[in-house]
Amino acid sequence: MTAFSRNGNGRRSVATLICGALAAGGLAAAGAAALAPGAAYASSHREAPLISGTPQYDNTDVYAFVSPDHPDTTTIVANWIPFEEPAGGPNFFPFAEDAQYDLHIDNNGDAKEDLTFRYTFKTHTKNKKTFLYNTGAVDSLYDPDLNVTQTYDLELLKLKKGKVEHKTKIADDVPVAPSNVGKASMPNYKKLRDQAIYKLPNGAKTFAGQADDPFFLDLRVFDLLYGGDLSEVGNDTLKGYNVNSIALQVPSDMITEAKHQPIVGIWSTTQRENAQGYYTQVSRLGSPLVNEVVNPIKDKDKFNASQPKDDGQFLKNVTNPELPKLIEAIYKIKAPAEPRNDLVDVFLKGVKGLNQPPYVTPSEELRLNTSIKPSMHPKRLGVLDGDNAGFPNGRRLTDDVIDASLQVVEGELVGSKNDLGDAVDKNDKNFEKSFPYVALPTEGSRGSSAKNAAVRSQLGDALTGTDDNTALIASSAGAGAAGILLIGGGLMWWRGRRRAY
Image (cartoon, rainbow, N blue to C red; front, side, top):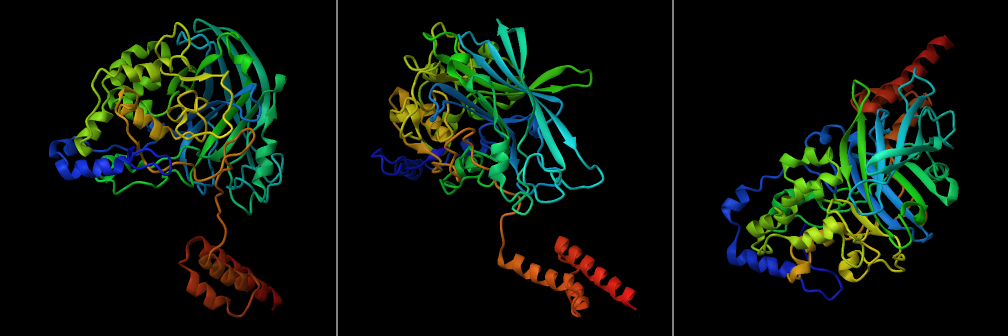
């Protein structure tokens, strides 16, 4: 969320504008003092004080789009567990067993869910006497060497005025794609991913498992909006990190109220079970960035526990947003006049004539017009660049929501044309062409290097029992895990020699 020029689209460069403003006015000392950054978070990565300590329940992003290869269906992708370090074993990253992971649909614009798809998970361990996630190379989701596995149940709840009227289990004990331990453990992870795609009735599909984090941005925004002088831009902070994804593809007419009303509102929540056996909502996410840069700290936990029907309590955060004032304080770009009714129309109601349902109740939902066909050549700025199949009409994986949102917040729709952005325009990995569309997760082991080769050479000498073992052990005793394995190899050789005598 800073100023940067757009490449090759003919729009004016705001980097030049900002540099000029900096030279003319400099940074206001009082403004800089008021901008002490908090903890790093992204679209909804560690965005509120309470949820930042419980990542299994932390919903990071929601995507909703008309499926590009099946345009009569809608795909919803919701992600949890931010900043998954691929090598973070031995337990890696399971879904929580004491949680309900929900995808909500409001198909009449009244800010109350009419349908809820609920995912609940169970963990299964084959051998509890080992510390290993897998005990050998894993060839399938049913491989006996995959020691720790998860399955899930999927329920469809039908509601009226927010009250559950009917509940149906539509999938039972579906396998979850595991965390990608590494090339040796899971030599064909794509095969495991494909096995985790489960077909539901009516041509619907479901998937749960690890994926590359599809959100792309430069998180150094929290260092006084990229260092206060644009010295920190253009780095995809989430590159190499994974998330846990839930993806659901359903016929669009299954989630819409009627053919004449094709617009749906979508959001996700997480409910956590307490000691008394009751579930309490601890995370909520619809449109990106709302609980990150719109809500102040005092409202963040409250928002995560709230319902769209009660979003009137947060209205001032939208009509009088903080972010434009921060940009003005640091970069001297004048904030648009308040109240910001343009933001209410776009982010709480939907764009009129595009994805705003009739008789809409303003609320924070990701609104999608399911009758808009997918674009053959999607544009990353979506509606701002004339591509009505993109954000804020739903959200595709390729949509650059940081740039689009910032430009709107800075007044793009009220005459303040700008090219604000973070210079990260696409994900570091290509997305898949078919369901579940998210990119494969980064593996825990990432190939060889010259250093790896040297260690393997020493380890190979130890395991083959050469007379140089004693020297190798002495020189490698402090080399961490590789040193421990080396010592073990030497001891096996020494015991073998004793038995020989």
